[in-house]
Image (tube, rainbow, N blue to C red; front, side):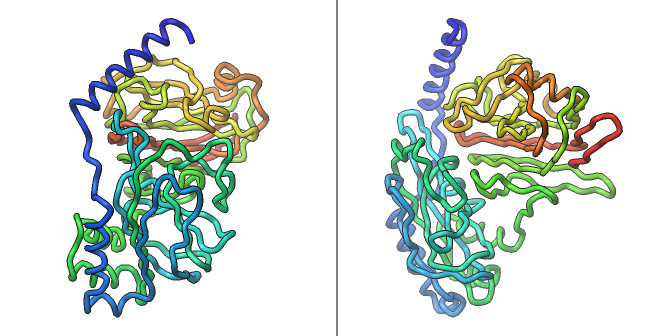
Length: 388
């Protein structure tokens, strides 16, 4: 590491430590005995019990090595609600923690596909049947979509626990949660669960969340007449939205888009793990690499760096495209020569583009990022792939 980069990193860590001392962030609803007592009472209420097909409560410790049996079975098409509270700690000294918004994963059966709740409260329809398994973990440790842990990333260094209530409803989540809300609440979780069930956030049309990080409620379609854009709001979470794009990479291939960034999730240099919160648009290639154009809170425009996170350090490269705070809140148009950028940032270019990504990260500093994307397209001569 160059001396200048080392000094900048040291300065970033000093600022970070000072902020954690003087500006601690709230943890969120507490798990443990208060959560358990509240939901024991709520689920047993005379108006609620008839709506429940099956339910379970369990505590997930951060240091558990595998999936925990939830103690109930789900069938394809079941509507379930998951309500969770508690905190998992990476470092109490640095106030580095995350909650059930990104830490609750489920699987039906031993070989079912894993799925994540998009928030600490979530209602969803189960796609596969079988005994339900649950695990608490940060995103990104998966070896496959069936939930095997990647041995290259041992599950160590995380403390704390999450308290979870899983309910399988007889007559649908909205009706069941209405009854639950009439019976009472616990730190606003039931009220928010009912609001989420009544008005779920749909994933933008044509896009899917990257399975490795799980579904979320970060992105949503915004339509007005014939115009359409994607709105992004991230707060204490992470999500990658992907659009399929089978597109040859040539000397004249360009990625074009417009974006308006209203708020950045971090104002410190994002090139270390503890401050790696950012907003970006990325291109994934057929060799598994991705190049992501980001808006930085403090790094100079034109800065290029490899992702500082485990796993991602092998596949992802960041290019700081914007960092001028005076341009926040403005719609800006971008036009990038993808092959030339790849050659400069990574090396010998591959043959094809396979996906376009939108990335939002706010898990490290627990801040908020807000932006909008429009008119995303891949262009090569007369060929145009309209993404949005």
